[in-house]
Image (cartoon, rainbow, N blue to C red; front, side, top):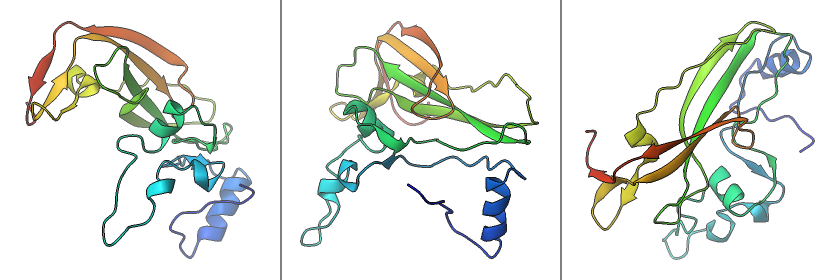
Amino acid sequence: MPWLNGHRPGTETGNAIGDGVFGVVNQSGKLPLSFPHHNEDNPAFLNFRSERGSTKYGEGVYIGYRFYEKCKKEVAFPFGHGLKHWNVDGADVVQVYVSQQSPSINRPLKELKGFEKVFLCAQQTETVTVKIPTKYATSFWDEHRNAWVQEIGRYRVQVGTCSAENPLSADFEVEQTAWWNGLS
């Protein structure tokens, strides 16, 4: 895409974009979606319009990065992508994804389960902690039992700054399957 993308521009948009492009400020923005190479690569492409007042969401849980990774489709810009000037103070977002190694149902390859924004001075590094209860990180909705289920098995945690780049990973085990409802 040979153009700049400025969501919800205001009267100072031109100055803001110029400051970002020329390194006066660190943009620190992250894409809230993936940009495909072609419109036909979009997971909702075949379900885009309504028919006789009804809209079908045929892509199910395979929206955005979940679809592109499951179908092994390259994207122009992945979910969470952002440009940065490392010689300028700014912010970044650490993203935590979790994947179940042998799920009993068809699940995305990984799911965003937590994130944390951190402000850094130029050239600064920092250790970031993202706390995610295991129950919430591993569960999915079981339609047959009308409850959330946390399945026994091995899970992988992946950490990075966008959906396509997760350089840190570790595995953990859930020892017992459990169902739950509500927030408890």
